[in-house]
Image 1: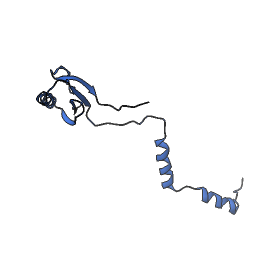
Image 2 (image 1 turned 90 degrees about the vertical axis):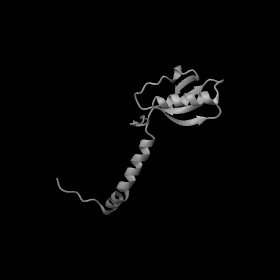
Image 3 (image 1 turned 120 degrees about the vertical axis):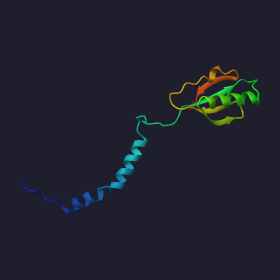
Length: 116
């Protein structure tokens, strides 16, 4: 078989439809953001918890609960004003016994909350 020569109009069409490499990378990024596959992340963040103190807990008792969390290796993050409580992070794999503290009513994993 012989080599076929394309007509000049077809060659021009091919040149016009070629997409620059940067545009393909952008398109790839855009389509990945619409992908239905869940994102795989390698999180290096420490587990975070919301600690709620008992309703009758005083400021000193709340401070004692925070100190207990610090003594167990936790780092106090946000301190709440609407509820008697705080957010604390712990190194991965540590065991917390904050739920047994006399002034704490609950310890819950900090997570996203969605409405319907």
